[in-house]
Length: 308
Image 1 (cartoon, rainbow, N blue to C red):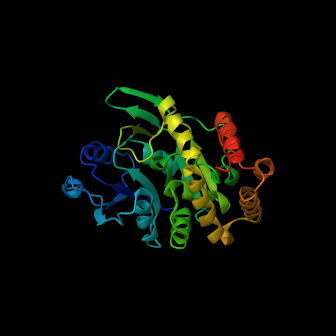
Image 2: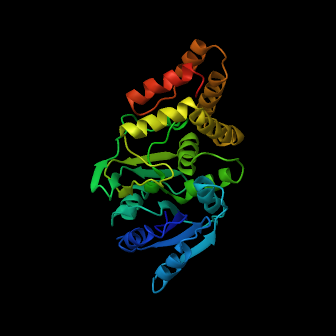
Image 3: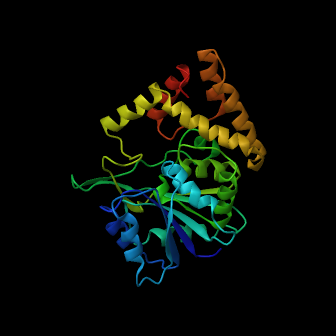
């Protein structure tokens, strides 16, 4: 495989955080990269800051205007525009700090995979609150990654993900066919695992994942975070997120392996079952699972309430 990496960064009013993130890109031990920033209408000088950063850099750095339809569409707009010779791609948030070996570790993990086999690398992170001067490791996955997991949750945050060229082009072709989805990285996990690609999880943290009030998603297992997640189930947002992912996969189900296509159909039929007990039993029989036992219990409770 080519060791070239195309870093895709979505930006929106990130001037306060960009200098530290851009400096961490410069510090990468793997130097064969280029950066594409899609700016979603910043008014704080983010574009000018990126252009100033590009001066005297050996790597190619570009800024384009984003679609202004949210973070997921911002990233997917860059994915849809990938050329056939894109090399590997890495998703990059504007407000994190990458460890110097982040890209090198990802490329080393992906290199043994045959060039024609889609592969997706994801890693753990340090969940970091700079203001409180605290950080803790993200939750480790307890079960092997699989399409059955990808149907209802992601296995790693997108800011850690690197896709080989085969996976990047597969995701590009899917993104050109499907409607809106909640998260580009969750879609990547579902598509690559569903197509029989290789999912690689690195349990060593690859970056500082900054937490602050303006985070689009955020991370962590604080009481407040868990209550917000519960609220998203109660008001139907989680069901919408799952539904968008499922619908995207239905549109491109031809890319799925026969086994994963059957799993998708079983899960779709189970979600549409009217009786609460039968619905929950059929969802369980479909084989879908979450990494956390506590989250799995909550998932079944949501299924009983028709919130999945």
